[in-house]
Image (cartoon, rainbow, N blue to C red):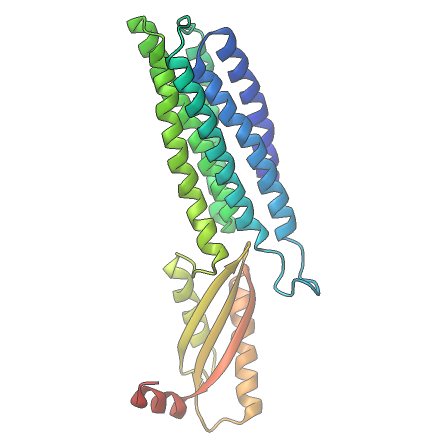
Length: 291
């Protein structure tokens, strides 16, 4: 949440600077960049609110917690990006068809500073998103990268316009940047949509780690099934562990609790582990009958 608040503050400053410099310096590519930054402010607010809701504990109405708010926030960010791209596309076409002055050279100085700041923000927010496995924060990092991409297009467009004395080069750059924004929007919406549909996490190492921990528990002969789903910033796991069929109900119950405790102790982002005890003989019979 601190990362999101910092991003909103930086984006507000950058958006204001880019829009003012673009309007005064006759560069729509820079104005478009500023509009994209303003959408960053709105998306940052959506992510902040999404994370704030996602970390709420389970209640009577939401026994599995409020984690779905987190990928939903990422989805909202993607919609903000698409909205910004559509505005830029419409205005770019209008600017191309309307005569206007050349962009001022000093706008390149503004963009150089923007590229440095956005590069740092992309790296920092991306690191935070990876550390906490947050779809929304990763989406925010992609949004910062998208903003940097628009700035890079603006640099090219303004430079070509000044060198060739052709003002529309700046507008064509803004139009091309809008297409990149749409691509980045889909790139960040896709994992959010998949997560809302309870798709298994993309990280194969997660299941490997869970199986290894479960199999290290005394009494566990193997792991038959391991199903993982992500709920906001946490993971919910269903495990079928194989034990000797001669064990008593109490012994099987103790093993199940031992597996649950071992997984949750070593994997701090796991919220719940549901362990099903599978007798060795029953498993062998199911394998032989193909069930």
